[in-house]
Every structure is written in C-alpha cells, then in structure tokens.
Image 1 (cartoon, chains in turn green, brown):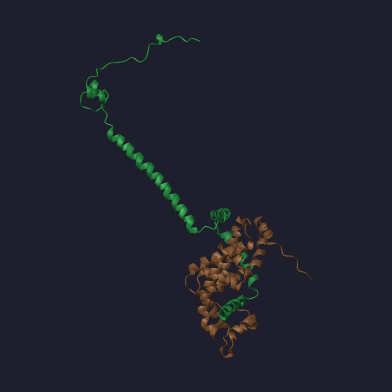
Image 2: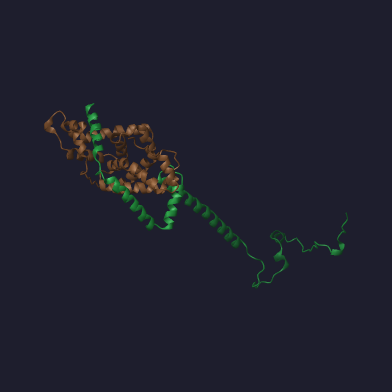
Length: 146
Length: 195
C-alpha cells in the first residue's frame, strides 16, 4: 500500500517543525517569571484551594461525573429536608385542627362536669361521676422492713 | 569526555515535592522540547503552543505534591499536556491559525522529504511551505482525540502501550483511532500524494 507509506512519511516530516534554537532557554526564564507573578497575584484562598485539589486522588473520572455526584447530593438533601418539613407541618396542622378544647377561658357556655368526661362516657350517658382517691395518707404506708 | 549521568525523574520529582524549585526547573528543561512538539502538533500554532505549554508546566508544578508515582513522570506530564491541549482546542473551536515560519532547515536534506516532494515525477515537486500547509490542514481536519493519537504515534514515535497509558484507554482503541485517522489523512492528502 504505497499510499499508506507516504502518509506515514509525510507525518514524520512534521518532526522538523521546531521553534528557534534559543527558544527553550527563554521558555524557562519566562516560566520562572510567570510563576513569581502568579504567586504575587494569587490570594491565599486560591493557593489553599489548589493545594486541596492537588492532594485529591488523581482519578480518571470525567468532570461531568463530579458535577453529577454534587447534583445528586444536593437533590438528596433537598428531598430529605422537604420530606421532614411538610410532613411535620401537616401533622402539626392536623393536630391543631382536630384539637378543640372543651374548656376555654373565654367560653360563654356554662361548663358542666360531663363536658370534661371522655367522649365514650359522654355518648353512653350511663357513667356516673365518681372520684377515686389514688393515694393513701402518709400514715397508712407500710413501714420498711428488711 | 563522558557526560554526567542524568538525574532520574523520580529524584527530581521528590526534590520538587520537598520544596526545591530548581529541581522542577530541570524537569522543565528536560521535558519542554518533547512536550512542545506534542502541543504544537495538536494546535498547529506556535503562539498558542507557547502559552499552553507554560500553563501545562504551571499546572504540573501546582499538582506535583499530589503525584504519587503510580505512573512515570513522563506519562503524567504527557497526560496533562494532552488533556490541556484538547480542552484548549475545544475552547478555540474551529479558528485555525497556522504559523509555519520556524521550520528547521534540516528537513530539506531529509531523504523522506525529498522523496515525498519529488515522487516519481520531478515536475511535480512541491515546495516546503506547501507540504507543511497540506499536512497541517489535513491534521486540523481530524478530531482532537484522533489528532492526539496521530501526533504521539506517527510524529513523536511513541509505542501504542505508552499512548494507551497517557490517554487512559486500551491499546485496541489506540489502534482503531489510528486506522480511522490514517484513512482520513489519506483522503485529505490524496491529491498531494498522487502528484
């Protein structure tokens, strides 16, 4: 395939495209000058950020992958926060709505004992009011014995 | 008189990591000619190459503390140069500015050049400028990724395995890209080759 040989030969000729001989000496000088200028120009925060980046492992991960990971993390955070907030708020709202106190200080309606009884007792109407003394007088307590 | 043995890259890297900037200067001197060729053949422009190569070494210097020696410094530097060149070309878009004034005069004595420019019929001899222009135009028609592979393999003479390490892809992919790129270059240079 003479054509292929010619293509390779032609490409090899590009090796001769070189800068002037003293270019590389000037290049090093220019590199040092730029480095000094950069150090003077850059803020501490930028230098710190560069150090952090240079310490990070050098994975071959596309930059989009990093962006995707960050986006996922943000989305997950938003989801978690939104699940907590509306759920909690709605529960509180529901509680507020369902709670209607039988006794209020501003109520104009006269309050009876039955109003303070549980709903089941009020519905049945057969439960009579009674009081139970759940504690005993101190003098009735059993003396400690070992 | 024998030349003093060259300090290994790993030692210069370690000294740079320990805070010796002169060690990095030595790495710059050592790698700039080779990386210049790589970046230049990707961009086809000397001014862009100069700026880009400065940025490549600046980035390497900033990141060298994170270099753990898992690959050779040679591979690491070439990876930075190729990635930055591809990013630059993506930003530059299709603007093509060639600078073809600095060609080494040695090419005119090169047997391959004489053969390529005269061919079987001396009446069809092309001048150096035209040949360079054709080559650069053909190269610019390749995608950035294909151009990188052609530059490293055909122009710089790197083996497939080394290119695969630098680009982080398999040798099979390198061969496939080379095959496709050569076919494209042949089509672009067909008229010139036939003359």
